[in-house]
Length: 143
Image (tube, rainbow, N blue to C red):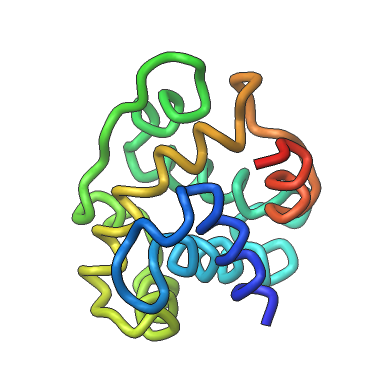
C-alpha cells in the first residue's frame, strides 16, 4: 500500500525509529496524508497535494497561526491532539487510527506532535509547494 511507503518516508523524515510502537509517527502521518490525498481531489480540491489540503483544513478550523508557523521559517507553534481531532473529519481520524492500531485520541496526539516538524521540513522555502505528491516532496527535499 502506498500509505506504507509514505509512512516509511515520513518515518525517516522524523528521525527513523525514534517513536515506539509498530507504526510510529511516520505511518500515522502517512495514513493521514494518504487518506486526504487518496480521494482524487478530496481535501486538496483536486488541484493540489494532500499537504495543501491539510493546511487548508487546519486553517478553516481556526489553526491558521499554527499552520502558518510550520510553513514559515520562524518558530513552530504547537498544537494539541484535541485541536487536531476537531480539525480533521471524524471518519478520517478513525481510519488513520485503525490503520495504525491505536485509538483516535492517540492518533490525534501523535499527529499533533509530529505534524509541525514534518510540515516545517517539507516547506523549507516558507511556502507549500504546489502540486506533486508527498512522496515527491520528501524526495525533492532530499529528506
